[in-house]
Length: 235
Length: 175
Image 1 (cartoon, rainbow over the protein chains, first blue to last red):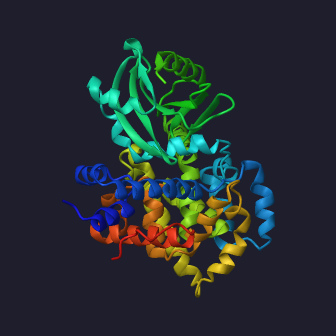
Image 2: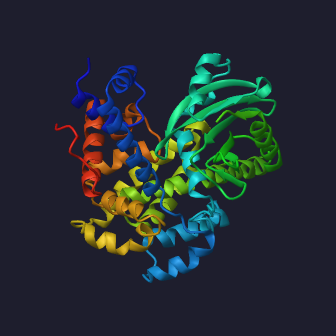
């Protein structure tokens, strides 16, 4: 049996470590479970803290003036080289416009931590899927499509279902965020992920996103509505 | 396809790639340097180096780690070139206060200040793990460390941060 200190050292080094031995210890030890929950709450703060705001494109010039220093050698060289190589793309796009909500940013950040989720194509066994969904008090209708990945993931201090559903437009990730309310539909397009967060009255929200696809915003919206319609809330 | 059209297409692809990754690259460079202006310089310079070396990127899916490596090297070069003396963390924090205090939640701003105070050897692996989603093995490869050394640094980083942010650390293990 793993020692408490051994477990806590490992989980402090990597709070999302899904090692079977760690999981077994956590399930058997209430103290370490409480410790992990506290750590995951802090982890959520840490993730948000690291995602510092990127000033919008419109801020580029005032920001440059604010520095007030004579242009550095690097900057002068950049100005010349950029015009030759990348033109306005680099000169004008120093800081990108990223008007995404912090929730959307957190969803995208979570994707980066589980790249393997997209690789699966086989259906997840029904009992496994039911186990992931039960804490969020929902089930999926039988026509929801093939669910090829299902995991209960730590996300902003809660465990939430993270699913990948195979659709006619390709694999779609769905995160059921019962603890996250949004006022309106929030589309986002960041780091190669395009998606939307849809409010679900009384049940928080769901995030639906696709990766590296040419699928347009309307199609994403349609898929999100389809996903929403395939959820049956049981509590 | 003629050379000109091919060149334009290549440039457009590279531009799109950089645009999609730039927010994270800037954040990474910021936490590396703790200086927004320097981060901007480093990312700009790195993009140009990446453009010139793009033939060495065989798989676009690996673009992010490839660019992060370029940024790390560029930052090291800038550091050498400018021959920075001892860094005054309080000065850096004061300088970047508008960025660090931008979140609506005060507890998030407190964590930012605590991250600024972390030693480089703890801050960098932590940023790679939390912000970039790197696994322990990937961090070890990037930083040329053993996996146990990475885990030790990550453990110490979180222990320091939690203590600095007033978390209950009474149940934290000792080394």
